[in-house]
Length: 68
Image 1 (cartoon, rainbow, N blue to C red):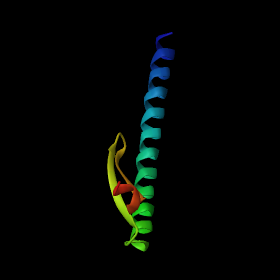
Image 2 (cartoon, rainbow, N blue to C red; image 1 turned 60 degrees about the vertical axis):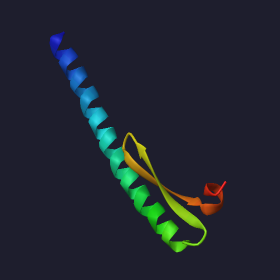
Image 3 (cartoon, rainbow, N blue to C red; image 1 turned 135 degrees about the vertical axis):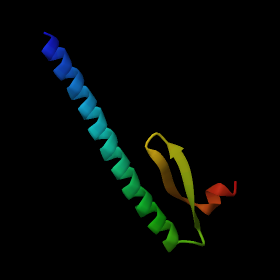
């Protein structure tokens, strides 16, 4: 019975760490994509950085929304 509890806890910890790692990698890839999109449209869009649980998140937002 004790071995089952240890294996279950270990499985949960490994799964959590793996999903967190995948999330961080995906967030970095999205940051690169958003940065590239904003560089294509410097006159109409602005790059906004937000803090989140997986690190900073960058979003390309039309400047007209930011001026309101």
